[in-house]
Amino acid sequence: FLERTQWRAVELLLVEGRQVGRMLEDLLPRAVADEIVSSGAHNCHNLHVVILQLDLRGYTGLAMSMTSTELAAVIHSLFSEFDDEVVARKVFKMDTIGDCYIVLAVIPPEGQGPARGSARATCVKMRFLADKMIA
Image (cartoon, rainbow, N blue to C red; front, side):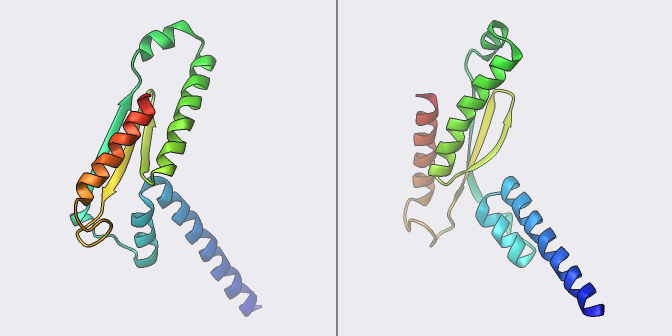
């Protein structure tokens, strides 16, 4: 009976650990979430990021010209396309708030990623993402 109880406790901890890992991946860039899960901490003091915030132009007029269900369908369709671009470019979607879409890209520390110009490369990646999203 004791072995079964111990096994069950370990299984519950593993399930909870996976749930925490998935939650962290929803809230944080994958590399940060992985580090927190594996070590229990993350040194964010040296973390440099680029943040892109997109607001839909003409949103108020759009909202006034259709029902809330139609508006939600348009926003969902548009943001789903944005989500695909975010995944393709391996950046992190921070949040959507109404008509605002917020994306983050971590600039690799020196010696990781492209050796030279990693900050510039990350900014260029975000610029291409913005161009794709507004096209």
